Image 1 (cartoon, one colour):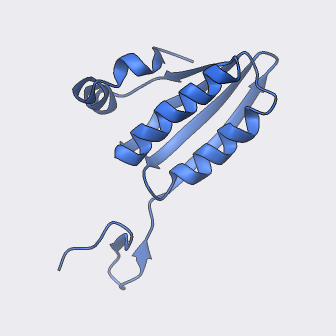
Image 2 (cartoon, helix red, strand yellow; image 1 turned 180 degrees about the vertical axis):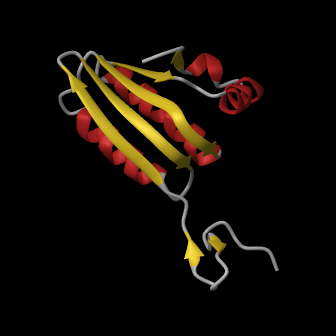
Image 3 (tube, rainbow, N blue to C red; image 1 turned 90 degrees about the vertical axis):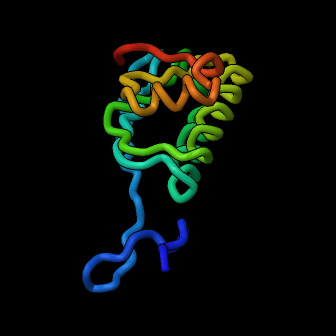
Length: 123
């Protein structure tokens, strides 16, 4: 029987492995860069949203999500990126995705979300 999404994957000992999202923050006077590594999905978007929302209380001019370490992004992750972008706009800040991999760029193209997000080639 296949694993359900909230069960995660089981290792050889039967332990459930949860996808991880590592977030490192680099601050500059007018910009904050979130270096993301791992999976952006239903199990990890809460962490990302909370960190960006906290920053939006007193936002810098620009928030960058460095996607170079992202290995997976599901529909919940895609929706969260769009919501965070809109929240940043309302806070008069720019949220940009940088170093977006080919797989994610293709998903953004297929879903039509590429035009809803600001994408830059580098941080």
